Image (cartoon, rainbow, N blue to C red; front, top):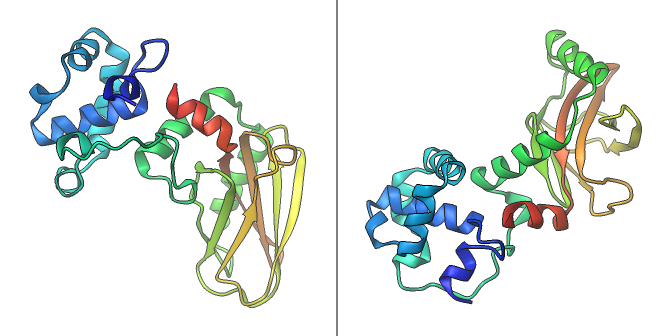
Length: 221
């Protein structure tokens, strides 16, 4: 696949890889080395320019210098953009998915109040350190706790409508706990609220679940 076919989709819009490539070029001071078609498109498209500016802010110059886009190292490979480590999304990718999902979902007022109250009442004996608020999870949710659980505890899930989407028992002695969300029937894409109940003390927070298919569609759009 040629470079231009990777940075422009079938409708002629700039893909995520095109935006990443341009942001890398900015950090490396190599915008003049980019294909003319890419530079012209960006300067004529305010939306893409703003998206690139956000990516530029998320990236660190030293990180880009150590691991530049393959366009600048002459090792451009024929690899699908969607070959992504869904378990460990980088900040830029997660932010793109989060913004798209937030536009599709209306928060649940009742659950938002419970979330606010749980933070005001203080931390439970065992705290959830990961996922953080508004995390985006594809295929799997990994919960990481402040320390090993001294008893078995429960995780409760509700969707944006406030409907129960399952309960999961966290065994005693757990420092982390994983939930598979590959089943689209049980966990369709959207906003969810989880409640971690520790000795009668609830902690509620929210996250986004996205099916792999829909995540691919978002990042390629």
